[in-house]
Length: 227
Image (cartoon, rainbow, N blue to C red):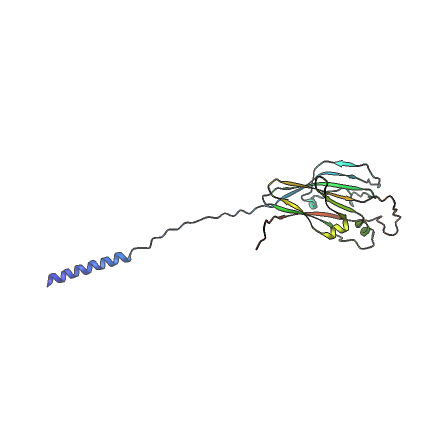
């Protein structure tokens, strides 16, 4: 009877050991970490006037023969540098323009970043805004002719300055690769009308002081619609 009791005690002990071993087994587990790097692209452009041709007026309003200027003029930050695509003059260096003057600038736009972009051109008035109807400035805006062309001279758009400002943004194209570039030509002309005399009355443009310019805008190119 005593042997049976001892044997029972041993069996109970073995069972307890088995239970303890089963309770200490952990679930197997393994993980993998994946790192993601997101580099933001850079949209960066340069705008350079490579050539300027035209028939210019001097400070006395005398027309020159056609001239060509080939020095590069950086227009990328024109507001800060004061550089201009044209030589029509300003308050600091006045030139009295007369019918017959015209200037045409060759503008080179380059992708200095790594983001493809669409580019456009918009003509604007200066800080004074649109000229008031009936003033010499208003008449001049409706006399000046603006033409935007491809490098070979094929016109993209042509019309008066007033109409061009009203029409707003002119979409021109897309530049994709880094260091790729495109060239456009922008011409502004005050036509000479042989059969018309401006005597200072009526729709005169004499003494007009009209400020205008244009904006080249580069916007990230999107190949498809974004939902």
